[in-house]
Length: 316
Image (cartoon, rainbow, N blue to C red; front, side, top):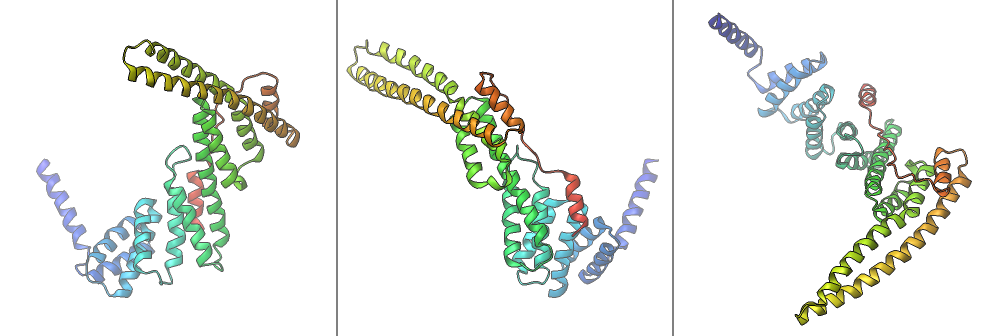
């Protein structure tokens, strides 16, 4: 039985191989025919073989973009991106370069997992769509390119908010303030203003919690350094005195920062309540000012939905 199965498998392999043309041009023609039939697996197999042979320049160019398109239509965005990148390097003046550039941007968006993960592909997508808009301003896909560039920016903004939320969770509010400030400076156009104002105001308002922990840590360090003053080693005593001086200065800085940030946080939260009275963030802001603690991490918005990208693919 095993022998019969092996013979049958061998026969199938021979039959499959017999269908593959021997020449690069024959493989190219069959590959293009398979693409017309939307047989993407066979298209990829044949065009890869054809490109390993000696194709005329025009057929080589068309085979390269057709191979990239086959990967794209198969949903293999990583290999599609690699082939579009190579096509653009080899044929920057090709009339098909704009198609490769646009689809490269879509590939990058499809490779983004979400704001909680690495956003390298979101950055690449944004840069590609900006380049497309600049180089092909009259192309009918410019409107879509702008939409997808904005989506990439939203992913980048949410990534910063995700990191800021992580710092909030760790009560490192001075670090989260920096992240939210960056979002306000770079991505204000893609973020809800009431949400951003709430996150910033809350981080400023709760800085005293971080200050308290830092001051307690510094006081413990000072206690240890005071013990070192009893040492018989002059160098150790000198270092301990210097450290005590620095620790005292740091404690005063944290006290000052806690007071200053609490005041600024209150101002921002009051501003939120006044500007956006019907916002759910205004309600939370009022509760914070009334003494209720809202230390929960705000959920990150993930604009990436794979169903969306299938719609994108169908409209290219």
